[in-house]
Length: 317
Image (tube, rainbow, N blue to C red; front, side, top):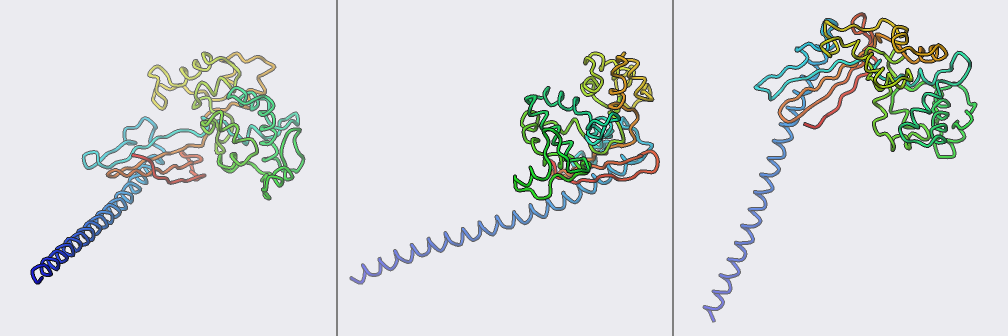
């Protein structure tokens, strides 16, 4: 009996030891995981701060008026490539200013509605839906409560549960455009619609900066005609921002080159421009596996610059 009780107690003790070892092992494992998490967190914060600092360095370089978009100084790396920054310089004039397109025309009509309707239909919207969206866009930016034929003013948005729409002023950002009735349908057929618009440019589509596709749409010409415009601008080397560039000085030169019919010259002339003074500087800084991006929109970068917009974001490696 004594031997049996002793063996029973020994077995219970052994089980207790195993449980204690398991608990201690779990505690050690948890402590190690927590320590690793803290180390990774601190490391990420350090790399994040450094990446942001490098992105700021890139912005400072890009904002210098003597730096050209092809300048190699816009891309720098350090520590064997483990950290550095890359800057791109573009013009906001390369996109259509949506506020300009929606402004009242000299004949009293509400914006360049025909242009926008045709563009949205080309992207995949039905004609009726495109017409409703364009009218809603006009109602959003005009200063009155008079509703366009197929538009949307306060009562329409109120029925949807929105008490402060439309804003009845020009768009301050492209994010605001997404609040307009019908924009979700446009985004469904063309998720990249933002690439076509801006709110910061100083005038019409800059023929020296815009992609041929946008120039063709604005001037109502073929893509081949628009490619001829681009080829003239970039010069023999095919690169923008180099010494052999031959930019246009005004929109009239482009209209003459394209042979735009007389009856269309006035309308096309309002859509086009040249040498827009608004620049976008995008700088990506990286350190380790962390990247930070800073975007800056400047008016008159080469003169007395004014900051119009500044954004910071984390980007994927």
